[in-house]
Image 1 (tube, rainbow, N blue to C red):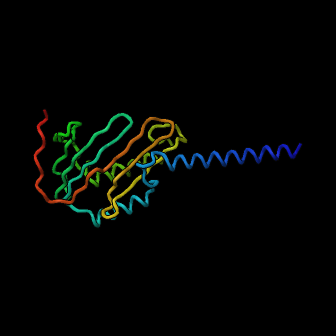
Image 2: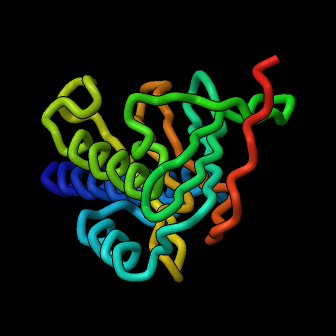
Image 3: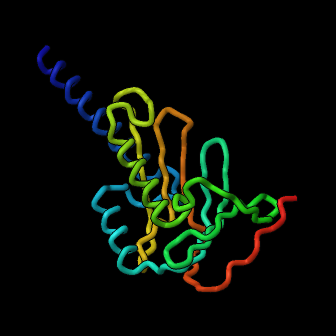
Amino acid sequence: MIATHVSQYLQTINTTIINLCIAVSLIACMGCGETGELLQADRLERDQALWAKSGPSDYNLEWQSISSHNQSVYRVYVRNGKVESVRLVRPDGKAIALKPAEPEFYSVPGLFRTVREELAQSQLDKPFGQPQGTTVVLTIRSDQAFGYPTLYRRDIFGVDQRMGIDVTRFEPTQAIIPPPDPPR
């Protein structure tokens, strides 16, 4: 009788361990091909320090915001560390001028700010407004030379609230900023 209980107990432990291994493997492979490393505060700080030390003050940046419900592409022109122009790239390829209230949000420091805020939100008792205990996975990839994020992903298990940022073009340059396309 005792041997049967011990055998059942060991079988339960083995099943639990196998399920945990499967879960960890799924987390590691989630979105394979487009994920980076798990985001940690010290990693983000190192990347920001590298950007502060090595990042150019003049650059063109193109990035896309990806969510479960939409995708937007932005073209940003930064000169002397200041955002001079933000454009929304339409599906037809036209880049239409935007006048955002916070243009710095679209720059590399703005991307760092977004990722930092997401990291803080993921550590709350109810991350992103979800029930306590919800699993959130944040991943990041960064440029090795300058430190800026090239890819960021947020996945919330059990919820269709995927969010991501992909830097599709980064070009240090002092070139003259081209005029925006007409809105129509």
